[in-house]
Image 1 (cartoon, each protein chain N blue to C red):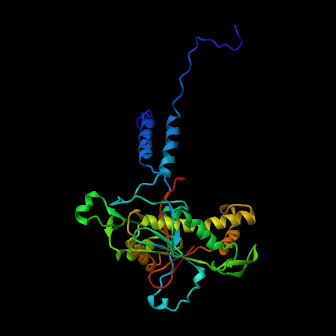
Image 2 (cartoon, rainbow over the protein chains, first blue to last red; image 1 turned 30 degrees about the vertical axis):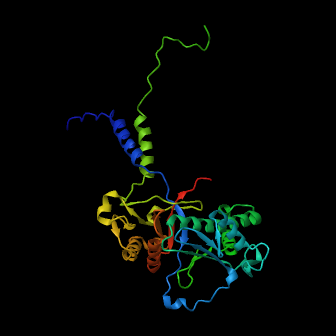
Image 3 (tube, one colour; image 1 turned 45 degrees about the vertical axis):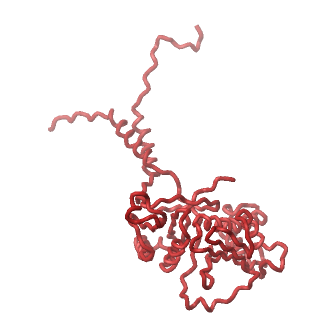
Length: 193
Length: 156
């Protein structure tokens, strides 16, 4: 029989654990990455672009950002603080005005036949535009659509978007589609969500 | 003598420290589980733009990153001050992006591929030209789901 092994002292266990704990406390980063989520359009060959149907002018909300980071909305100077309101008005067209986009009836679950806008937001920027400005504009446009959806969700279901179930959310997304097109110099490519 | 008064002469027994390692280990495991260490060392300077319509990147394993910005001071001698793209740990050119996107996709399991996201971490002072090029390359590589990384905007 072997000798009895002396018991290992466990007094230092706590110290070792503390050491490790402090190491992880220091190296840990709790921040969750977040950002503006978008979907890029499918890649299309330049040849196929020519055949795309032209979109009626009243259905397009043109936002241009030039190299000095100035904003041109529907051919007039604009301030970025007004952009969200204007985009909302464009997408919703509450008064069925003639110079805002057309609507077409569409069968949508929960809503029945609903007049869905044909509006498209077209965003174009210069090669020298600052990325920060570009993102701020994107943010306002996405924000406008999100706000419209949120309002509709509250009005119809009495709940905010993130409390709705999958089908209800789909229905609302269909009524206010996120159609932000980032026009290349030639043709139109959609960035949808 | 009051009924509740205990005998003062008696010593307070020492608190047992036997459970201390257990408590510390519990904390340790918590931090070990939640920690995520930075995988790449940034070679470009990035200060993210601010936005309000944020969504979170939930599954880190599905995200691949592209960094764009000015090279940091120690690389400016060799690479100049123009904005550069960084993939993993190296500077890259626009042409490398397709390959990178495809390699990232290959590295994931088949069933996870449709949910992959490319996170663009771009400095707010970058010119759009380079960002546009990157986006075009991502479209060619069919990595369409992107996320413009940004910070939460504080209320005005």
